Image (tube, rainbow, N blue to C red):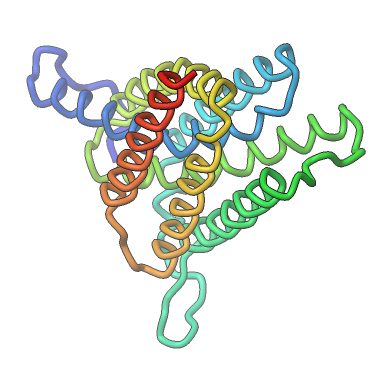
Length: 239
């Protein structure tokens, strides 16, 4: 993997690779954005904004650190152990663990939202620390998935870093808009949680070397979001 800044800015292939990477990083960052938007929803405005900035800053830092340690990231794909003729690497373990966490977290949030058991006396500071810990955990999972995918698209780490920075900036503004929309339309929270359930299942499948094209997941959730948008418009016209 080439770590030197030895490319020409006039090379169309470089710009094509950069734009492709930016688009890919934004798409892969949707999962990250939705999770952060949901998990900070219960905070007050001041802590919510701080948690959003911290979460996405950590996502940026983790991705850049992983890119600079590209050899270590590539090593994550080496087999650690085998079970029933299935070979598992550290990447697979991270994806499976992250997928299980997303399934558990999304299920818990759906339960709390429907059953009304969301209030727990854990203290503001402890709740804030718990939220930040969960953001760090999910940032790590999505960062590993994002960087390993990016490695196959270009040999220039510096191009990947630029793409990641641009994508995280887009993610920041998207996160704010998504959080505001969910706050104004609470019914969309269930759709977002269902999206995380699908993402969690896809991560687990990926960990078991079963690839589920994310386009299917994004299409399903995009269609569900469109139907919910029509429902919201219909409700607004009636009121």
